[in-house]
Image (cartoon, rainbow, N blue to C red):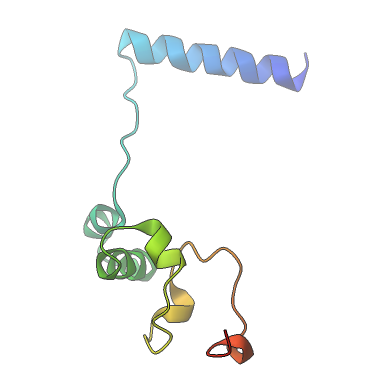
Length: 90
Protein backbone atom coordinates (compact mmCIF):
# COMPACT_ATOMS: atom_id res chain seq x y z
CA UNK A 1 0.00 0.00 0.00
CA UNK A 2 1.46 3.35 -0.99
CA UNK A 3 1.75 6.33 1.33
CA UNK A 4 -0.65 8.44 -0.74
CA UNK A 5 -3.29 5.73 -0.57
CA UNK A 6 -2.94 5.51 3.21
CA UNK A 7 -3.22 9.28 3.50
CA UNK A 8 -6.33 9.35 1.33
CA UNK A 9 -7.94 6.53 3.34
CA UNK A 10 -7.15 8.35 6.58
CA UNK A 11 -8.62 11.56 5.23
CA UNK A 12 -11.79 9.78 4.11
CA UNK A 13 -12.14 8.14 7.53
CA UNK A 14 -11.70 11.53 9.24
CA UNK A 15 -14.35 13.15 7.04
CA UNK A 16 -16.75 10.25 7.63
CA UNK A 17 -16.35 10.54 11.41
CA UNK A 18 -16.72 14.30 11.20
CA UNK A 19 -20.01 13.97 9.29
CA UNK A 20 -21.29 11.30 11.67
CA UNK A 21 -20.55 13.52 14.66
CA UNK A 22 -18.10 11.05 16.17
CA UNK A 23 -15.45 13.73 16.35
CA UNK A 24 -15.57 17.52 16.46
CA UNK A 25 -13.61 19.77 14.17
CA UNK A 26 -10.98 21.60 16.19
CA UNK A 27 -11.63 25.31 16.50
CA UNK A 28 -9.03 27.97 15.88
CA UNK A 29 -8.09 29.92 18.98
CA UNK A 30 -6.33 33.24 19.21
CA UNK A 31 -2.99 33.37 21.04
CA UNK A 32 -4.75 35.14 23.90
CA UNK A 33 -7.27 32.30 24.27
CA UNK A 34 -4.42 29.78 24.15
CA UNK A 35 -2.58 31.64 26.92
CA UNK A 36 -5.70 31.65 29.07
CA UNK A 37 -6.09 27.93 28.49
CA UNK A 38 -2.47 27.27 29.50
CA UNK A 39 -1.46 30.00 31.99
CA UNK A 40 1.87 28.37 32.89
CA UNK A 41 3.25 28.50 29.35
CA UNK A 42 5.82 31.23 28.85
CA UNK A 43 5.66 30.85 25.04
CA UNK A 44 1.87 31.25 25.10
CA UNK A 45 2.21 34.39 27.24
CA UNK A 46 4.76 35.95 24.85
CA UNK A 47 2.62 35.10 21.83
CA UNK A 48 -0.47 36.60 23.50
CA UNK A 49 1.32 39.81 24.52
CA UNK A 50 2.76 40.38 21.05
CA UNK A 51 -0.63 39.62 19.47
CA UNK A 52 -2.33 42.11 21.83
CA UNK A 53 0.31 44.81 21.32
CA UNK A 54 0.05 44.58 17.52
CA UNK A 55 -3.74 45.02 17.38
CA UNK A 56 -4.51 41.31 16.98
CA UNK A 57 -2.64 40.95 13.69
CA UNK A 58 -0.09 38.21 13.10
CA UNK A 59 1.46 40.09 10.20
CA UNK A 60 1.97 43.14 12.41
CA UNK A 61 3.74 40.94 14.97
CA UNK A 62 5.97 39.49 12.25
CA UNK A 63 6.78 42.98 10.91
CA UNK A 64 7.18 44.57 14.35
CA UNK A 65 9.68 47.43 14.51
CA UNK A 66 9.71 47.95 18.29
CA UNK A 67 13.34 46.87 18.67
CA UNK A 68 13.52 48.27 22.21
CA UNK A 69 10.79 45.88 23.38
CA UNK A 70 12.21 43.17 25.66
CA UNK A 71 10.14 40.59 23.75
CA UNK A 72 11.33 41.67 20.30
CA UNK A 73 13.62 38.69 19.68
CA UNK A 74 11.14 36.27 21.26
CA UNK A 75 8.14 37.32 19.21
CA UNK A 76 6.29 34.70 17.21
CA UNK A 77 5.81 34.52 13.43
CA UNK A 78 9.19 36.14 12.69
CA UNK A 79 9.95 34.29 9.52
CA UNK A 80 13.70 34.77 9.23
CA UNK A 81 15.50 35.66 12.44
CA UNK A 82 17.12 39.06 12.37
CA UNK A 83 20.75 39.61 13.20
CA UNK A 84 21.50 41.98 16.08
CA UNK A 85 23.99 43.85 13.91
CA UNK A 86 21.39 44.75 11.27
CA UNK A 87 18.90 46.33 13.69
CA UNK A 88 18.70 50.07 13.20
CA UNK A 89 20.64 50.02 9.91
CA UNK A 90 17.59 49.36 7.75
